[in-house]
Image (cartoon, each protein chain N blue to C red):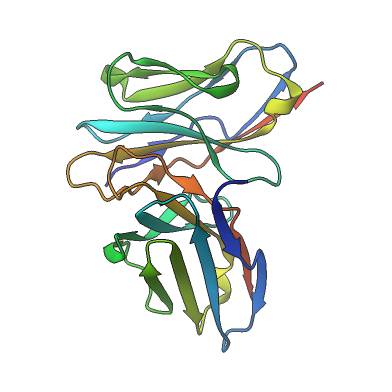
Length: 114
Length: 115
């Protein structure tokens, strides 16, 4: 049990669909992150939220739209995705959005775009 | 841009063998360094971290890593591996000035330990 829960665990969606990934943490953390793990590539940061404010967008295409309504919840809204967006999407949280804090990861959502 | 390089992509060892996984990073300033592990079917979890102080850090399950600033390296070691150490290992770094908590990861090393 990691304290960071992601749903769904698996998602298959068509290129015209709209879906959302959800992340919830029960650790009392104030920073939350979305990472993308594609086959044969390093984990890549997508977004950072610190105290509900977005502090980093790593040049992510607008078809990925994050939302952080409070420090415990983070969403990733998906629309008109491409097959190359198929990947494992990992959520993480840390006490604060700073360099000297440990990140705790969820188990990820395996996304397949068809 | 910062980058992290893990030299070994796939390592196969027998139980009781010694392990060393290489990690080099590109950033020349002050960094924090991490090793994460992902056991089959499980989430990424922290093995150990270096922020400052003694460059030899000890983590969980008998792992240790040594920060060598002059070599931009943070290699992971374990004297005697077990079958249960079969997993994927990730080195990660973040830079200190103005950092948002963003981690930059290496590509990962898959370790297979044969019983």
